[in-house]
Figure 1 (spheres, one colour):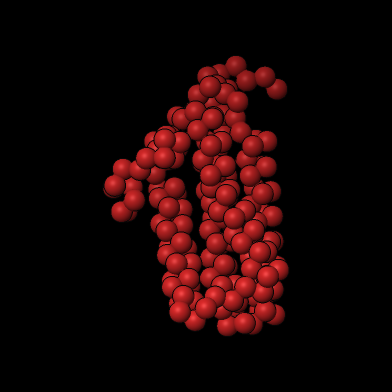
Figure 2 (cartoon, one colour):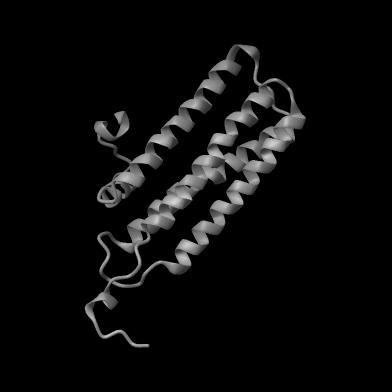
Length: 165
């Protein structure tokens, strides 16, 4: 059926799939704290179970990324550029990818941090999760800043207000 009205110019919003992907990326990173705690205690059985969950969540994030790319509207009536959205997706997808790589490396080497830095490492993991949580919440509440955020990421400059919030 051919649509003759103006609504055909507007594609389905890609924001919801982008939010779903960020949620999955955040869940993957959140599971890393469980892995890191188990690894720091030398509980490799628990760490391996956590690693399996991280891999599963990273694969789900990849599926969501592929689905978003395949269904991204090709219409010209989006409030931000297609390229900016894909750049943001690429940066966002690095969260679960790096998490999966890190747990793979730590598991393979049976990496245990020295007692002096183990608590700092766990604290750093928690800071990363909290930052991810704040940024995913911000993505859910403010679609207008996506282009600006991508612009800042490309330039590798961040206004102080973005870093502090």
